[in-house]
Image 1 (cartoon, helix red, strand yellow):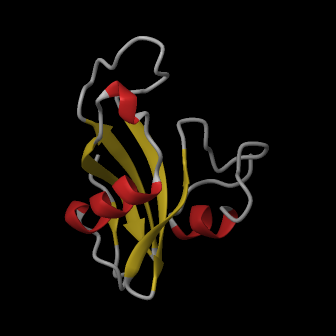
Image 2 (cartoon, one colour):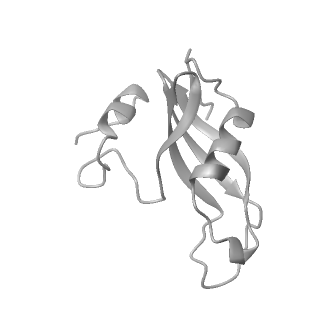
Length: 113
């Protein structure tokens, strides 16, 4: 599946997103892992949804880390900022975090059943 990519001021490039995700999404540093790469799922209309891939696909048991973390980003003045992250975020009620409906709509994700 190729990502949906449309014009946005912030570049829809992993290199533009990864440093922001590393700085804004907390990860268990004691586990010796970090976000190593980004897989862009959607990027359009000033929003992006990506998979942030951790450095160790088999983290230490008990850390509650997954091989990747879903991250929603917003273009603010030509730079990305993290809106929300987590594997349990969906654009359908009751799983939509506050302030995410606009992002879900912009990314073309279904927001109602």
